[in-house]
Amino acid sequence: MREYSVPVLVDVPASAGLADTVFRRAEQEPGAIVMRRKIGDGWPVVTASEFRDQVVEVARGLVAAGVEHGDRVALMSRTRYEWTLIDYAIWSVGAVTVPIYETSSAEQVRWILRDSAAKAAFVELDGHEEAVREAAPELKSIWRVDGTPETGDVSAADVEERRKRVSAADLATIVYTSGTTGRPKGCRITHDNLLFTALNVLRGPLEPLFARKDPAALLFLPLAHIFARMIQVVLIEAGAIMAHTPNMKNVAPDLQSFRPTFLLGVPRVFEKVYNGAEQKAVSGGKGKIFAAAVDVAVAWSKAESAGGAPLGLRLRRAVFDKLVYAKLRAATGGRLSAAVSGGSALGERLGHFFRGVGIEVFEGYGLTETSAPVSVNMPGANKIGTVGKPLPGVTLRIDDDGEVLARGRNVFHGYWKDDAATGDVIDSAGWFHTGDIGELDSDGYLRITGRKKEILVTAAGKNVAPGPLEDALRAHPLISQAMIVGDGRPFVAALVTLDAEAVPAGSTVAELRSDPKVRTDIQAAVDRANLLVSKAEQIKKFTILEADLTEDGGHLTPTLKVKRNLVLRDFAKEIDELYDDRR
Image 1 (tube, rainbow, N blue to C red):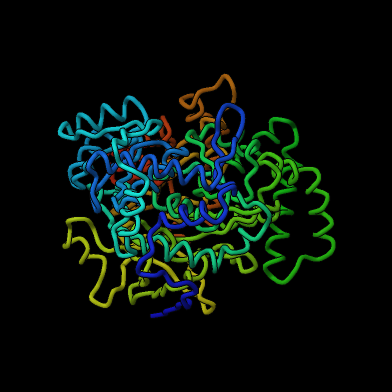
Image 2 (image 1 turned 120 degrees about the vertical axis):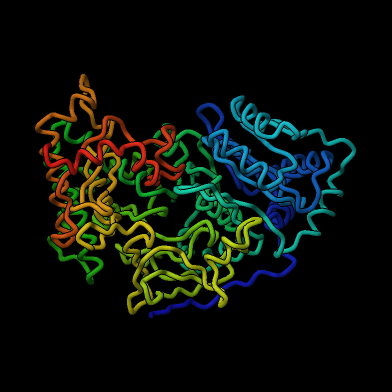
């Protein structure tokens, strides 16, 4: 059993609330830029005083509608400026935000609204309003996010009185797990959970990201997810400039026009950036140059980790910086130098590539139940291939069976109305059992090696962790998603989907599934992945599915994690065929 902890850097007063910084900064720096809103092709500024005034306006409407301290208010919307505005308005009156993914099914909407006993709701689109009204016809207060509730005779002073009653121990949000398996459970997260984590991140591992001039970040991941939500709080507490983009398809142009200094993403985002750059180079006849540039970037990053790159390697990197890397940085607006990745494993080669390009990706790890991060890499101490050291105030332990345990004020206060489920994950000593398998090295860096409940056991009794194999497969530009199968089967196999953006013009995925060259390329990716594991764990067969796994299709969570149980159910025929000796 190994254990590692980092001392607390910042405490949170018992009287603190998440909205306090919004009001304090409006008084101290009323003209400071805190947001930029996307309107047309521009990004007009929102000052600290303007944001505070808009928060108060929405808060007045909440009070007028009868929303009391501790009442739950649902919020169903894409990531946009109003999401943050409404979130802070809810917090300023002591109410509790209940996020609902804008892609949630009718049954999920119904369950969350009824389980949380939401008293009011904000929605963005017609479809959202229809879903909420159908799920909770008794709900009287349903507002559009781009409107303002009627304020009646409620004053700003009334809002201020409500804000002063908020304490750190109060519930700030109930975040429902995205549900890769089973019905979503509501995680009870307090003002203290979010503030303690954000402030210790700012004073600790990520402080250098905010030390440069005009730090700014573009949010495009769902704010209904705890990862983006925590970054929202971090940005507000840091006084950094925040912007939002609601459509993932607009991320590339929005990065160029907004010009962030850092961003956050999940591994699939960084994989898509890499694959897109590679495909563009190949189609333009510069595939060999790009491949050489990748090798140099990776080699330089590895050499830097080992103590410093030799002169020859530094010179080759300087050449490729002009030919390739500078263009990649320009595509992100030219100011981006760092990113934070979470949600699943990034892959070491990809991490080294981006650092070699000049955009260092800091991989972290956490869960909804830990208010997002429990560990993260940091500038000047980025050990690629790990998810970093514990955050200040967090202790990590590797249990006897290899499970990662966490303890600290970032750990949630249990599941909403589900004491039994809470008892299953928080033991009597206060340790949260993550369900992930990992290792802590002698310097305190955590490496996640598998999922306790996702370990496959083949018919021969061999334990197989699917994560490393899947990560390696997804690194191939042709592959969009990959899922390893083999539980109770004679060998390990893989389900693979093709990336629609990599399909040549005039071709279809259906045609390419049986194309000999495509199958040869996928087999090469399988062969490379197999180098990571023992012979008994290697992929013996693969099949290419007819369509990609998507969130709309119900096979991915909003943060692009595969819902294994649903894929196993819906593609049972394809899996059986992999083990049919007649084929």
